Image (tube, rainbow, N blue to C red; front, side, top):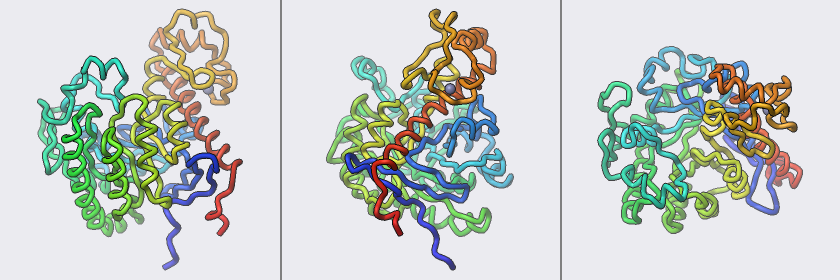
Amino acid sequence: MPPREPLFSVVARDPQSRARAGMLRTAHGIIETPALFAVATKASIKALPVWLWEAAGVQAVVVNTYHLLLAPGADRVASLGGVHQFARIPTPVFSDSGGFQAFSLGVAFGRSVSKVVRSQEAADGSRASSSAQNGALSRITNDGVQFRSHRDGSVHLLTPEASIRVQHLLGSDLIVALDECTDPLAPREYQEEALARTHRWLAQSIAAHQQFAPETRRRLGWTPALYGVVQGGRYEELRRESARFVGKQEVDAIAIGGSFDAGDIQSAVHWVVEELPESKPRHLLGIGEPEDIRAAVREGVDTFDCVQPTRLARHGIAYGPNLTRLNLRNARYREDSAPLDPTCRCMTCRSGFSRAYLAHLVREREMAAATYLTLHNLFALNRLLREERQRILSLGRSNDSAA
Ligand SMILES: [Zn+2]
């Protein structure tokens, strides 16, 4: 058998920071990193037909295990050929473990749980009730996340094995071990307990992954790469301990998880990356503020996923010059003949649409508005990552790419 190409290789490093440019190889193509995975929760990027993904610069997508498990069901997706065949997805697919959604949609049913606590929410404690101890619709047990479906109230237990099984059935290229995403406000004792659980679950996930791999290879012709998740909240000691632990396990790649206090992301990433092996790709789960992405790239993160560009677009908010936010519902845009961003080369901007026209579509709830803005926002955030990659490439070719 010919030697398999490695999952990941670094092609250049920034001598001034930990930033690196790389190639992440999957059965559905190579992802040039640093890169963003566009959110395709239910195997579709909302408002963006698959023919426009390339125009939006989409290199890979993230699908949601929790949602696909409930509908149409993982067994159905598998029987229809896997998620690439079922949804005609041309790019690599990353799936999350489903744990965060199972927990947050259950506990916080009816309101949103964000991955980043901004200072006001932290100050008034408005998220305290979503901390991990209990909840009407879901709870963490030592076995997994028990939850009631937000669709029909049916009760499910998402164990590490179940999550890996579902992701194998979906046929994702990149899969994630189940972890417990703790509230950043949870006390240290709870963070320690949750971290121990996350590490135990990782061992179970690895065993399940190895068990399912031969069958998946027979069915699809390849096997997914497994990400282990580093947790530890805001505590440096726990973050480092978790990174050392996960880095040593039989995982192909590392994901950095957790909810963060605003401003904490960079230090958490810094501690973690210092402890991680150089050879494995690193993904930062669910973070997508442009300034957080830039900072994390410089700390050595390779890939990101975030709902922000697509969600903002559906709320009538477009990225303007330098990724500032333009809320097109604001009265000032009604007569603004400028494009969203004069430096943007996306199809929306090249079509010559003015802010005034797009603001009109948003106000009138024309469905094309979501498509135009989603395409532009994804293009704009992908451009940030492309520019970071170019910057790293221009600074220095890596020694290990010479071979
Ligand atoms: Zn544009």
